[in-house]
Amino acid sequence: MKIMQNRMDRGFEKYQQEYEAKALEVLRSGWYVLGQEVKSFEEEFAARMGAGYCVGLASGLDALWIAFRVLGIGKGDEVIVQGNTYIASVMGVSINGATPVFVEPDKYYNMDVSRIEEKITDRTRAILVTHLYGQASKMDEVVALAEKYGLRLVEDCAQSHLACYDGQMTGTFGDVGCFSFYPSKNLGAFGDGGAVLVKDEALAREFRVFRNYGSEKRYYNKVVGANSRLDEMQAGLLRVRLKHLDEITEERVRIAERYLTEITNPKLMLPQVRPKATAVWHQFVVRCKERDALAAYLNDREIGTIIHYPVPPHLSEAYAYLGHKAGFLPVTEQYAAEVLSLPVYNGMTAEEQSYVIEALNRF
Ligand SMILES: *Cc1c(COP(=O)(O)O)cnc(C)c1O
Image (cartoon, rainbow, N blue to C red; front, top):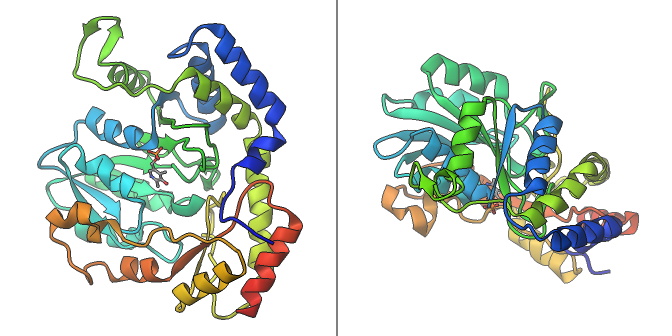
C-alpha cells in the first residue's frame, strides 16, 4: 500500500459535483475579480468565525505583511515571533523592515508564553502568534501580555481554521487574524488565496483599499498599495469548502484520535492538546530521537512523511543577516531535528490509517 503524506484529490472527489458546478457558474458569470463571490465569501467566513469583518487577499503571506503594513509597523520596530514557525510568518514581519525577535515554543509547539516578557524592549510593537499544526495557542495569557505592554496582536491562522481557545475562534483574539487558503490548508482553495479577520470596519476598509492598488474608487489612489485580491474563482470554491468545513475538520479529528490511541511505540512522542484549546490537526506531528531513521523506515514501506520544518527561520540563509547562530534557540532547534509529520488527509481510508499505525508500532 502506497500512502502519501497528503493528497488533495480525495478531498476534492467527495464534493466534486458542487465544486464543478460552482466553477462553471463563475466561468459563465463574466466577472472574475472582486465581485459577488468574494463579497459573499467574506461575509460567510466572518460569520462562521465570529469575527467583525473579513477581507479576502491573494495569499497567507500577503495577509501577514499587509497586516503589519496597515498597522504601521516597520523599520526600527520589533515584533515577537515564535522560533519554530513556518518562515512566512517571519517574512510577514521582515518584509516591512521590522525585526523579528524569536521566542522558544512550548511542549504544544506554540509560543512559550512564559518566555515572551523577557524579549520585550522599548522597540517592541507587536506579538505574532502562529497556531502551529492546527492547535490554538494559549491566548488568554498572550492577550493579557499584549494589553499590559500596549502591543498589537496578530495571529497567523494559516494552519488553524476552526481551532478554538476557550471556545473562541483563533483569528479573533487580536488586531488582525491572518489566514491562508493554500490548497493543502484545512480550508484550502484550488490555487492561492488568503484573508484577514478584523474587528472594526475602518480597519477592514484599510485592507480593502490596500489590496487594490490603494484605491477605493478606480484610478483614484490614496496609498501605495498592492495587487493582492482573492479572485472570484477561488472565493466561489472556498464558499463550497467552507460549507463542509465542520465535516472536513471532524474527519481529521477522528484520524488523529486513532493515531493518539493506537500508536503505542515508546520511541515516538505523540502530540498533546493543551487544556482549553482545540486542535484541527492541520498536521499530526510526532517527535523521535531517531527521526531520520524513522522517516527512512516509513519511506521503505511507501509511507510518505514531511518535516515541518527542517531549518528554523533563525538559521535559514534568508535570515543570516540577523546574525543568529546554532544554539541560539535550543528548543526550536531540537524540535527541528526531531519532528515528523505523519500522513493525515481528508478521504484517508481506515485501511490506510491502520497500515500507518502498524508500521509505526513495529519501528
Ligand atoms: C502556509 C502558511 C503561511 C503562508 O501562506 P501562503 O498562502 O502560502 O502564502 C503562513 N504561515 C503559516 C504558518 C503557514 O502554514
